[in-house]
Amino acid sequence: MSKRKSWSEKLQDNKNLPRVERITDKMSKRWGTGTVLIPAPMEVDEMMRKVPEGKLITINEIRSALARKHKASIGCPMTTGIFAWVAANAAEELSQKGEENITPYWRTLKTGGVINPKYPGGAARQKELLEKEGHKVIQKGKKHVVVDYIKSLAQL
Image (tube, rainbow, N blue to C red; front, side, top):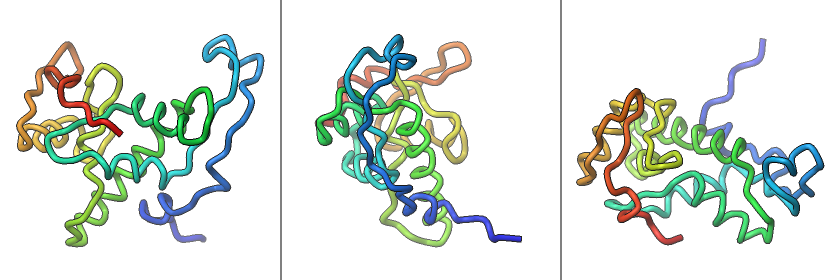
């Protein structure tokens, strides 16, 4: 039986990424034409690490910045979201080992300023960490949203 990889090991495994691919006919209905960047996990983590205290970023901003970096039309929403989740769990794993210099994953939001309930500790933990940094979080239906998040977006 093989040992499960730690979150940090998953983050370090670049799986032959990044890679830019042509958008196929099937995908073009949703994304248009051109190319799509499939980022490496560490690239997503690096973008998340650049967000200073008091600032925020969304997965879409990370996708756009990485697509520009690699001269692709778009960044893949699926892999970027998955790798942000891996980065968040790796950061929490390091935090539990006493590491203080971790990726501030709580500053990375979903589209529309929505908190990611799949991050470690769920929406409650991310809300707590964001409020500590001065952000106001409200509940809209089942989602938690950062009020005026656009005013706090980091420029990467």
